[in-house]
Amino acid sequence: MKNYKFLLLLIFTFSITGFAQNKKATSKQLSVNVLIDANKNIYVEKNLTPIGDIVKSIQKIIRNTPANKYEGVTYRIYADGSLQHGTIMDINQLLLEAYQPINTKIEKYLLDTKANNLDGSNWVKQLNKLDL
Image (tube, helix red, strand yellow):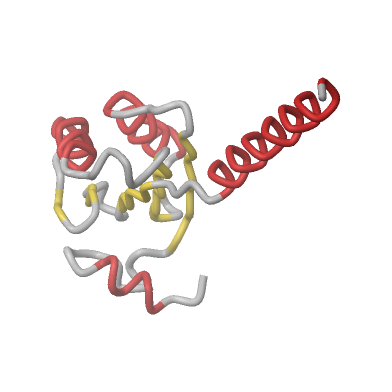
């Protein structure tokens, strides 16, 4: 009888562990897109945002997102290739200052924003048309 209880407990423990691992594998991250064009204009999602308002803008996006939907954030920074790396790093720091959960990823992409017509509030639509 002891062996059956032990075996049952062992099976139960492994089933819980397997369920926890499956949940973690399917977790989804919130993606926040940021564009820095050649003129150093910054667009957070579709909104032209002054550098001083980036933190507030990111916090507003995070606060309006359901808490149980995402388990982390991915910041995608699309920048013009002619910019200095320091400019991109400054924006990166502001994004992390605004919100940095444990599961944070940063993706940086250098593009020719003028040739790809990525200026203005419709830049996300134009970006989706590109073959990246």
